[in-house]
Amino acid sequence: MMHKSNVWLVCCLVLFTVAPVAAQDHTMSIGIGYQFAKFNDVSFPVGASIDFEDRVVQQIALVGEVGWARNSRQQFGLNDITTHFHSAGGVRWVIRPRSRFEPFVQVLIGSERENINIEKFGSDSASAFLFQPGGGLIVHIHGRENVFGQVDLHRAAHGDESMNAARFVVGLRFEIR
Image (cartoon, rainbow, N blue to C red; front, side):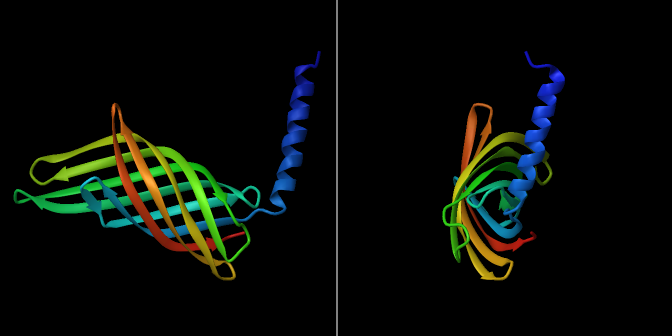
C-alpha cells in the first residue's frame, strides 16, 4: 500500500512535468468586440465582450469571457433601461489551427445578471445560470493581430424559466504570447 506522502510526490511530479511540456507550444490571446443580442422580441444593440483564450494544445483552448449588453426604450412615457452582464468559462475547439482562417466551436458555462430600471418605479435584478454554445471564425490579419466574428446561443435559466438569445460578436483579437 502506498503512503500518502508517496501519492503527493507522484501527483506533484506529474503536475510539474506536464506544465512545461504544455507551455512549449501554447498561445494566449485577448479578444475585444462589439456585441449585439436579440432576446425574443427585445434587441440589445449596445454591448461589449472581452474574452481570454489560452490554447492548451493547438486545437483546444480554455476560454473565459465577460459581456455586457444594454437596451433603452420608452414605454407608456417612461424610460425602461435593461442591462445584461455575464461571465462564463469553457472550452473552444479550433478546427483548423495555424491557418489564415480558423473556424471554432465553443461551449461556455457561467452566470448572467439582468437589471431592469424603470423610471419612477425603481429597479429589479436577477441572476441566472448561463449555457452558451456557439461558433465563429478567427481571421489572421498581421503578426499577432486578428479579427473575429462569432454567433452564440445565449441561454439563461431563471429557476423554471429560461430565456434564449441570439448573440453576435465582431472584434479584434490580440495574441499576447
